Each structure stands twice: as structure tokens, then as C-alpha cells.
Length: 404
Image 1 (cartoon, rainbow, N blue to C red):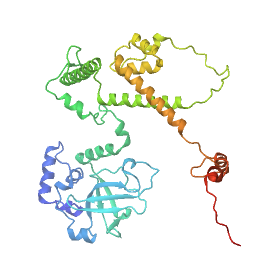
Image 2 (cartoon, rainbow, N blue to C red):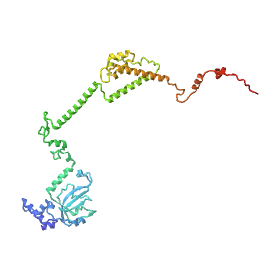
Image 3 (cartoon, rainbow, N blue to C red):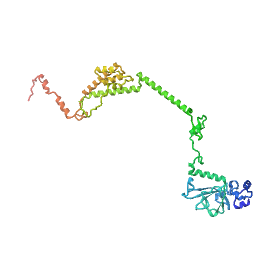
Image 4 (cartoon, rainbow, N blue to C red):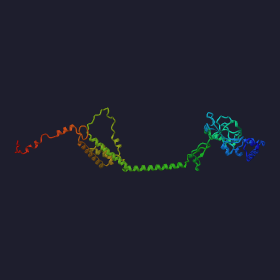
């Protein structure tokens, strides 16, 4: 043990007993403790030679044997540490199993590389130069002793593969991560009521005769929705057959009827001579037959229009289009249709009378402005003659004379 301490090993008494027990398990009972210590984690055998005061002042005794904790290239990203195109700036962390020292490679060295695995033993033979809060690597004061700690190397390899980009495209059989399974499928996989069987590849095979609970609930909801739609459709069809229309449809029909009445009245009031149309512009489309014309005009309640009643109203002197619309609105009731036609003709006559009695505007087309022609017309309408022509003969002659 004293020989190990002289070499720089900070081995405690308990740690020396650990080395003895390790050599007893070896086949070679004469194996030096030095070789056993190289392959042993210092956290199990050292007595913490680096104190807090030494770590704070960046000092250490010499000679001192430490082991590599990690080697990282600060000039490269973690996923491409081995890429030679990246700049080299190594950070080496050495530990005695309890405390640690951080060394920076400010000048390129050959003793440390990115492939130096944890557990490698290093002997510091002199004081390392300081650079700020770190120690600078000096090759002349460092000896690489080697050593392989299986537990540390295995953990280092796993971390290295996890940071490698190639590891992400490996399959599960090749050592990559397992395939992500969505939560819905994961929950369905562990469902107690499993349906179907699984084949050799692990895929679930469903039987055609079996259905899951979710499909049953969906079918029930779908059937109930279809039943509601069918009920509403039948109810609406019955209301149409009885002549009962919703309020909004009835209101739309009344507004449409009023618009058509006003349009026809305005057309009849405009008494203008027809403009001849060239024969080339006249539409040559054949006029629709009566049968097709009647088929496109059902009554308000959906009943078929009575042709005989329409013909009877046309023979009374009304227009065919007005008769058809009146019968449509009256639901094949002749009396109601006749009242509507009479009121329509009365409204048309009143509107035409109002248009004829409306005074014409003066020249210029502006209200309140009287032109020169208006004065001329007033002069023409004045009675001819003077006031004396009407009353001159009835005035008595005055006997008074005017003195001069």
C-alpha cells in the first residue's frame, strides 16, 4: 500500500481491502495491485486526495493519479463530436472519485483525444498552469497510464450511440429505439375485450363477423339520427298536403305576389309604341306547350292546378297569366281567385289614372324651375279682351264734369 501511495494513488485502507478481494477472484494471485487499480473505479478505493481548498485554489499534490471522467470537444456540436472538420477545443474533466478538476486544451496536444474513454488513469507530475478558473493542459506534466473500467466504458458507449445521428435511423432489431405507438392504439391493445386474433408478426386480425363496441355505439347513434330526419320529413310532407305552410314560406309567397302585381301595373301604365325588332334578333325558340306550362305551376299547397277553372276565368276576360297565378294563390278556389283578379284590375286602373293626371315638367327637367315656354303658355291661356268689354255697358254715365 505504501508503494501505491508513493506512486500517486490516493488509496485508503478500505480501498486496499477492495483491491485484495478483487485479486482473490482473479486466477493469477500474484497480479500486482498496480494493474488491478488501473482497471478499478477510483470512487471505490480512494480517500479523496483533492480537498475543497485545493479545488478552490486550483492546486493539487504531485505526483497524483486521477482518472478521466469525460472528454468533450467544445468546438463541435454533441451529435458530431468525431467530425474532423469541426475546430478542436477539448475539455477534459479528471476526478479522484469524489472531486474533479477541469482542464482546457488551449494548445493542441496528442495525449488526449475525443476517443479517450472514461476510467483512463492519468498521472500529474507537476503543477498545471492556470488559465482563469481552469487549468491548462501541459503534455510535459501529464502521463497517460491507461486502464479499462468496464462499467464506465459501457455507459460511455451508450451515450455516444445516443448522440450519433446514425443511431436514430436504426430499427429496433438493430439496436435502435422501439417504434412509437399512438396512445389510441396503445390503449386499445391493453383493452380487456380484445377482438380477433394476432398473427405471427403481431398484427391484429379482425374477424368479419365480430364488431367492436365503438362500432356498435356509432351505428346506434347513426340510426337514431336517421330516424329523426325521417320523422321531420314525413311531418313536413303531411303539412304540405293539408295546405299548411310554415310562416316563412307563406310570407315569401305574399311578398312575391305583391311584387308581381306592382310590376304588371307599372308595365300597363307605360303606354309606349312598340319598337320593331329585326327578324334576326327575334327568338326562334318554340313556345312552350300548355301541358308543360301547367305542370310547372302547382298551387300553394302543392295540389295540381285545375285547368278547367283557369279556362273559365280566361273566358271572363282576364289574362291567362293572371288567372293562373290567382288560382295558384287561391288553391283552386274560383271565388277567391275571382276576387283577387277584380282587385288587381281595379289597382291597375287607378295607377294608370294617376299617371295620366300627373303634370308634366317644364323645360330643363328640374322641379321648381319655370322656363320661358311656361310663360308663353300662360299668356296663351289668358282670355282675350279687356275688363270693359264685360262690364262697360252696365256702368251709369256720370253727370259730373271736370272743371279746368
